[in-house]
Length: 214
Image 1: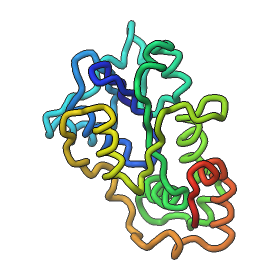
Image 2 (image 1 turned 60 degrees about the vertical axis):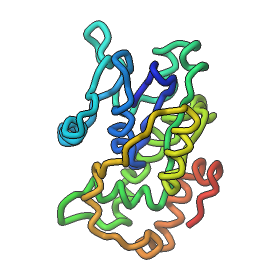
Image 3 (image 1 turned 90 degrees about the vertical axis):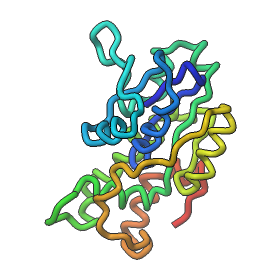
Image 4 (image 1 turned 135 degrees about the vertical axis):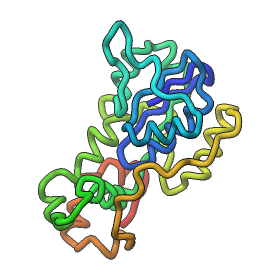
């Protein structure tokens, strides 16, 4: 999560939407007063090797009030209405079937892995929706950010954000957390009919709002 007082934006980080790569890129343009939350040690090394700012201003009076996947409602409470209403707030969302596959390989990085059907039935698949997705950028069930960008249009969305905020040139997004997916088939080749429907039910809100189709 990043709050840039310099450029007046708030980036809410959802799960499995290239959020870490976006955070690393955005850190390049942050100022001394901006809030940058920690990422994994490995990804912090990427950020450091690029010469970008690392975690800063996320701890207040000894307490880590701002953290990686902090929901919009908590950010609003911490920054107050003037900042929340005055800053441009954005996040990213992703096709839920593709998102679940990415999450499956992230959660099961080595063999033996459960089947995708077992993973879905376990309930773990839903963790990238709800508290890891829609409920991060919604408050009381209503989308609370100014723009939900689509992962599928990443390059165009980043250009749009840059223009919207009149940002200096953003670097290309580094490849963070992308090496664990060993099966690169399209998700339609991986999901069976029952699994497809199960994901559809889990992510009904995202599908309704953004028109995702299998």
